[in-house]
Image (tube, rainbow, N blue to C red; front, side, top):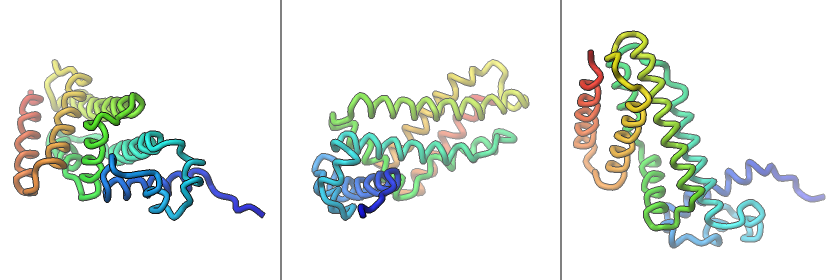
Length: 197
């Protein structure tokens, strides 16, 4: 009797193997054979779930984006600007695995292998980040904690871009954690000052 395999569990296993192989070898150097070996599968089995490395890469990045957004969705609405600053700060301090994910994404997109679908997924992720920040800002505006002339949608997207810049800078360039935290604190304080009434 053939073994029954849960398709979504197998895809998650392969995505995890892809992440490990990409981190070990780099995206460009990784072959589907490397991913199959990492997953403990025959290469033919791998192709039953992902027809190409590009398709697997897209699924991997969509999985990372969904994980990052899910981490935001559980956050409460900020009670005041200090709460808001603390939430923003918590979103830009990355653990080692998150930094590897950012580096991998940057390698994929900057090397020209990023497909239109991947770039579209990244744009959707940025839109979701901007919408989340806009929602947080709207609650502060409604409570009278920030200037009433603030366009929360534009500021939410601006903040998402600032956070993205800090995260990329941390993942690619800054090895000194205390220096990075000072950069984060100064950037957040600058942003918060612009919101104050």
